[in-house]
Length: 174
Image (cartoon, rainbow, N blue to C red; front, side):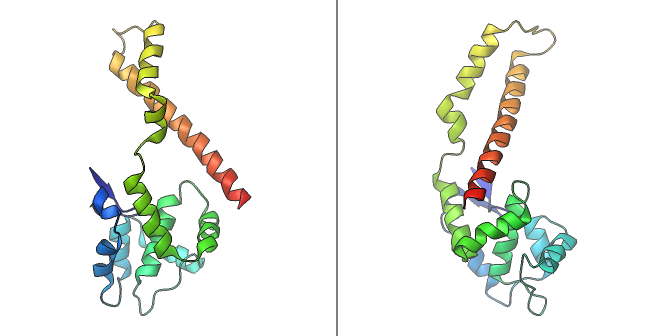
């Protein structure tokens, strides 16, 4: 199964996620990367990176080059920006003050943790099938499979809301 390094467009396998250094080290053998390269690998606009540098979420590039530390910080910000405020992400990172190690550990966790522990643990598909069987849907209007997909989307969106609130609560407790 193909994945991406979190916060990037760099395609990797689960095995690669367990050793991020093998992916990132060769990319930073020279001075680093220029803004254009960084934005292409992260899939974000140059003005976004420049704004994050201006707001001091990321250190300024040296001679217009972003080193691995800066790249990893940008990848982390990019990955979690839809879940936490940028300030919240920075506060989290300050706890360890070692972005590369945290990023590497997070990638390893993604490689070994279940892809979808909540739905697999709860047997969501079985529950949805049972619920659909109990309802009186007009399958001439919408197929059973479409109804199942709709309920799965709704439940997954609901889980994202619940999990985001839980992550915010945990963040406040730190």
